[in-house]
Length: 463
Image (cartoon, rainbow, N blue to C red; front, side):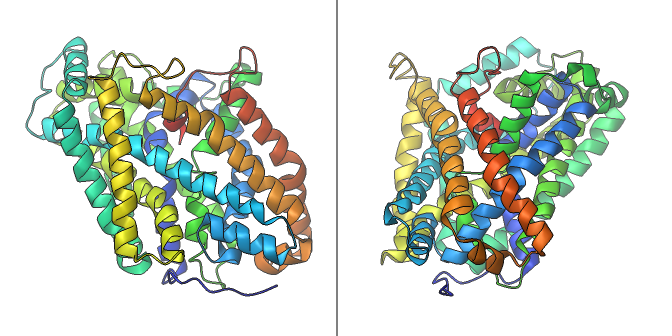
């Protein structure tokens, strides 16, 4: 099998890749979804189930994506094409990589708008706008924000400018530099916020909610929720790990680095729960997930807490950093693909950044001026969220499993992974027989085809 070389360069070290990949997977879902679904579905028992799902779905698929990227040494379409050629398979498999790039750009278009909410709340918290406000009053503030397209557009433009600027500088001078600085800052902020919440909030009730095991709460529906979150939280199916894997040095163990990424992602989710729920329970506020938690309940809690203005601003800074490092990873696969087709990186970043900005503008307008316009019964924002999370990502993930598990020769996989024979057989068996079934369940559940199981959460809220 050919040994290819990436035209984009490589990560300077295993540590640099680990930080960049951690930044890619730690996103909004770690902060606003995992703590709630854990607390509502068995606490510590759900955590154990979730870790098992990560082992059976997240880890095998994560390793498959990294393997694809490093072996193909290019963007998702290029990686699929190169491996298909080497293995004598149908070259149309490259279309899976194209779909992954499209999905990542569509997700980024509304992810940026949500990050803009975070920027606005960071500023408003810092100047004390939420001090002493009731939950209903802050709900009105959030509604008013979405009624102001120019304000949303300002933050969306700023966030996309930040993201495009980093990606335009390449792997080591852009992606790696940001990851080396801001991923550690993100975890430090989450730890500080957790300590603050433990002191100022009801830490006993929060720990009970998040960690006390209730095995009686586990059922088929909870298993599907855990499976879905294990898939979405690791940014699988978006092409980000294929792109990042293309820059991975040959001497880095895919297994070892995958384990560390999964552990870091889980740690971020647990820290987020400790940072949020002590304050929520201390204020006798409702436990919930998603935008309602972050942009209504939590500002109310910070608004009535000691030094809440400062720590509220720090929380939204952490939220924006998590979104930013994920957004960089979402833009990179498409930019890498255009570079491979002959376009200069700076121009490619500007072109795709502009496309994403325009799609984000449509999302903004769907909150206000176009709020009455429905496509297949959905707003523009709802349509993109449903299309990417409920359909594209699970299908892409399933196709990746089929391609790596059944289309790539075992000798090629062994050569790339360098596993001991026993470990390799276990990984391949799980990838071939367990992960596809789990992925099919994720897809059917996301589409609402498993009666009584779908929890109604937004796909992007999970990842």
